[in-house]
Length: 176
Image (tube, rainbow, N blue to C red; front, side, top):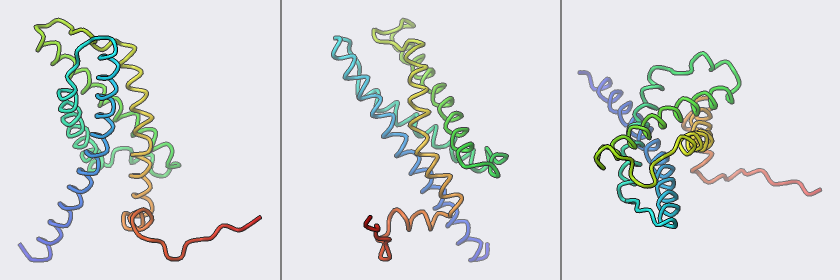
Protein backbone atom coordinates (compact mmCIF):
# COMPACT_ATOMS: atom_id res chain seq x y z
CA UNK A 1 0.00 0.00 0.00
CA UNK A 2 1.50 3.35 -1.00
CA UNK A 3 2.44 5.69 1.84
CA UNK A 4 -0.07 8.37 0.80
CA UNK A 5 -2.99 5.88 0.80
CA UNK A 6 -1.88 4.55 4.19
CA UNK A 7 -1.82 8.08 5.62
CA UNK A 8 -5.27 8.79 4.11
CA UNK A 9 -6.70 5.63 5.65
CA UNK A 10 -5.18 6.44 9.05
CA UNK A 11 -6.48 10.01 8.93
CA UNK A 12 -10.00 8.87 8.00
CA UNK A 13 -9.92 6.25 10.77
CA UNK A 14 -8.79 8.87 13.31
CA UNK A 15 -11.54 11.27 12.19
CA UNK A 16 -14.19 8.55 12.49
CA UNK A 17 -12.97 7.50 15.94
CA UNK A 18 -13.00 11.13 17.07
CA UNK A 19 -16.56 11.54 15.78
CA UNK A 20 -17.57 8.25 17.43
CA UNK A 21 -15.91 9.22 20.72
CA UNK A 22 -17.57 12.64 20.73
CA UNK A 23 -20.96 11.04 20.08
CA UNK A 24 -20.48 8.43 22.80
CA UNK A 25 -19.38 10.98 25.41
CA UNK A 26 -22.35 13.28 24.70
CA UNK A 27 -24.84 10.42 24.69
CA UNK A 28 -23.33 8.77 27.78
CA UNK A 29 -23.53 12.04 29.72
CA UNK A 30 -27.13 12.51 28.62
CA UNK A 31 -28.17 8.95 29.48
CA UNK A 32 -26.24 8.99 32.75
CA UNK A 33 -28.17 12.06 33.87
CA UNK A 34 -31.38 10.13 33.14
CA UNK A 35 -30.12 7.16 35.17
CA UNK A 36 -29.18 9.45 38.06
CA UNK A 37 -32.58 11.16 37.91
CA UNK A 38 -34.37 7.82 37.89
CA UNK A 39 -32.29 6.63 40.84
CA UNK A 40 -33.16 9.72 42.87
CA UNK A 41 -36.88 9.56 42.09
CA UNK A 42 -37.17 5.84 42.84
CA UNK A 43 -35.15 6.09 46.07
CA UNK A 44 -37.47 8.86 47.28
CA UNK A 45 -40.30 6.33 46.99
CA UNK A 46 -38.33 3.54 48.65
CA UNK A 47 -37.91 1.60 45.39
CA UNK A 48 -34.46 0.07 44.90
CA UNK A 49 -32.66 0.98 41.70
CA UNK A 50 -29.09 0.09 40.83
CA UNK A 51 -27.43 3.35 39.77
CA UNK A 52 -24.32 1.49 38.60
CA UNK A 53 -26.49 -0.82 36.52
CA UNK A 54 -28.16 2.27 35.03
CA UNK A 55 -24.77 3.84 34.24
CA UNK A 56 -23.60 0.64 32.55
CA UNK A 57 -26.76 0.51 30.43
CA UNK A 58 -26.19 4.21 29.64
CA UNK A 59 -22.69 3.38 28.38
CA UNK A 60 -23.88 0.40 26.32
CA UNK A 61 -26.74 2.44 24.83
CA UNK A 62 -24.41 5.34 24.02
CA UNK A 63 -21.98 2.96 22.28
CA UNK A 64 -24.82 1.44 20.25
CA UNK A 65 -26.37 4.78 19.36
CA UNK A 66 -22.94 6.28 18.60
CA UNK A 67 -22.33 3.45 16.14
CA UNK A 68 -25.73 4.09 14.54
CA UNK A 69 -24.77 7.77 14.14
CA UNK A 70 -21.55 6.76 12.33
CA UNK A 71 -23.39 4.28 10.10
CA UNK A 72 -26.08 6.84 9.26
CA UNK A 73 -23.45 9.41 8.35
CA UNK A 74 -21.57 6.89 6.21
CA UNK A 75 -24.82 6.07 4.39
CA UNK A 76 -25.66 9.79 4.07
CA UNK A 77 -28.91 9.37 5.99
CA UNK A 78 -31.06 12.43 5.52
CA UNK A 79 -29.18 13.31 2.31
CA UNK A 80 -32.44 14.35 0.65
CA UNK A 81 -32.78 17.04 3.31
CA UNK A 82 -29.38 18.62 2.62
CA UNK A 83 -30.79 21.25 0.26
CA UNK A 84 -33.47 22.16 2.82
CA UNK A 85 -32.94 24.43 5.83
CA UNK A 86 -30.69 22.85 8.49
CA UNK A 87 -33.62 22.71 10.88
CA UNK A 88 -35.27 19.92 8.87
CA UNK A 89 -32.18 17.72 8.95
CA UNK A 90 -31.60 18.43 12.64
CA UNK A 91 -35.18 17.57 13.63
CA UNK A 92 -35.27 14.51 11.37
CA UNK A 93 -32.05 13.06 12.80
CA UNK A 94 -33.10 13.90 16.37
CA UNK A 95 -36.40 12.06 15.85
CA UNK A 96 -34.80 9.01 14.21
CA UNK A 97 -32.15 8.62 16.87
CA UNK A 98 -34.58 9.26 19.72
CA UNK A 99 -36.64 6.39 18.28
CA UNK A 100 -33.58 4.13 18.08
CA UNK A 101 -32.72 5.00 21.66
CA UNK A 102 -36.24 4.11 22.76
CA UNK A 103 -35.85 0.68 21.16
CA UNK A 104 -32.58 0.27 23.11
CA UNK A 105 -34.42 1.40 26.26
CA UNK A 106 -37.19 -1.17 25.72
CA UNK A 107 -34.59 -3.93 25.21
CA UNK A 108 -32.88 -2.77 28.42
CA UNK A 109 -36.20 -2.97 30.29
CA UNK A 110 -36.81 -6.45 28.86
CA UNK A 111 -33.34 -7.59 30.01
CA UNK A 112 -33.98 -6.23 33.50
CA UNK A 113 -37.34 -8.01 33.55
CA UNK A 114 -35.70 -11.30 32.51
CA UNK A 115 -33.08 -10.86 35.24
CA UNK A 116 -35.94 -10.68 37.74
CA UNK A 117 -37.52 -13.90 36.47
CA UNK A 118 -39.84 -12.36 33.87
CA UNK A 119 -41.57 -10.16 36.42
CA UNK A 120 -41.43 -6.39 36.18
CA UNK A 121 -39.35 -5.12 39.10
CA UNK A 122 -40.80 -2.39 41.25
CA UNK A 123 -40.35 0.92 39.48
CA UNK A 124 -40.50 -0.62 35.98
CA UNK A 125 -41.04 1.69 33.06
CA UNK A 126 -44.60 2.59 32.11
CA UNK A 127 -45.75 3.54 28.61
CA UNK A 128 -46.17 7.17 29.72
CA UNK A 129 -42.61 7.23 31.10
CA UNK A 130 -41.22 5.71 27.89
CA UNK A 131 -43.04 8.24 25.70
CA UNK A 132 -42.01 11.18 27.86
CA UNK A 133 -38.41 9.92 27.85
CA UNK A 134 -38.58 9.74 24.05
CA UNK A 135 -39.70 13.39 23.85
CA UNK A 136 -37.00 14.48 26.32
CA UNK A 137 -34.31 12.60 24.39
CA UNK A 138 -35.57 14.09 21.12
CA UNK A 139 -35.20 17.61 22.56
CA UNK A 140 -31.81 16.76 24.12
CA UNK A 141 -30.50 15.47 20.77
CA UNK A 142 -31.32 18.73 18.98
CA UNK A 143 -28.14 20.54 20.20
CA UNK A 144 -26.07 17.45 19.36
CA UNK A 145 -27.31 17.30 15.77
CA UNK A 146 -27.23 21.09 15.47
CA UNK A 147 -23.49 21.00 16.15
CA UNK A 148 -22.93 18.09 13.76
CA UNK A 149 -24.96 19.64 10.94
CA UNK A 150 -23.32 23.02 11.46
CA UNK A 151 -19.88 21.37 11.25
CA UNK A 152 -20.96 19.58 8.06
CA UNK A 153 -21.99 22.89 6.45
CA UNK A 154 -19.17 25.21 7.58
CA UNK A 155 -16.48 22.53 7.92
CA UNK A 156 -15.00 20.81 10.93
CA UNK A 157 -11.94 23.04 11.08
CA UNK A 158 -14.07 26.19 11.11
CA UNK A 159 -16.23 24.66 13.82
CA UNK A 160 -13.15 23.84 15.91
CA UNK A 161 -11.85 27.33 15.37
CA UNK A 162 -15.11 28.90 16.53
CA UNK A 163 -15.43 26.78 19.66
CA UNK A 164 -11.91 25.87 20.73
CA UNK A 165 -9.53 28.60 19.62
CA UNK A 166 -9.02 32.02 21.09
CA UNK A 167 -10.61 34.72 18.97
CA UNK A 168 -8.17 37.56 18.53
CA UNK A 169 -10.31 39.66 16.20
CA UNK A 170 -13.48 39.54 18.22
CA UNK A 171 -16.27 41.91 17.37
CA UNK A 172 -16.92 44.49 20.05
CA UNK A 173 -20.49 45.39 20.90
CA UNK A 174 -21.53 48.86 19.87
CA UNK A 175 -22.74 51.06 22.65
CA UNK A 176 -26.26 52.39 22.10
